[in-house]
Image (tube, rainbow, N blue to C red; front, side):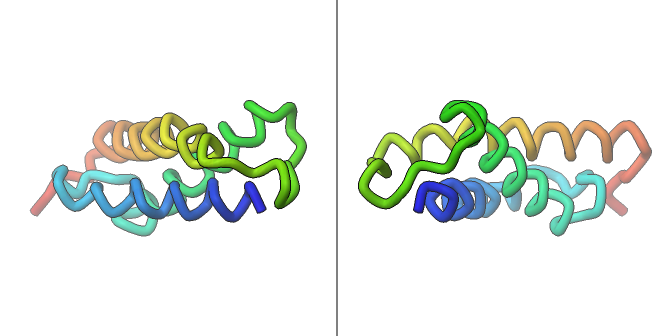
Length: 88
């Protein structure tokens, strides 16, 4: 259940990508994948690379995914900016 929470939080944070110029590596889809994988990876790292079950999932599981989603979007953004994905 926590995996679903982390993924949904990553998607929720991804929606804020419309407020920055589109210099993401892979465009908006790259930003989506960066947020999703970042949120899940950090959520897994916090829990020792195990997925908590339904009874162990709390509201803090959603908050654990926020730094990962932001970091994932930032990585994809800086890779895209470095490769020259300038807005036309």
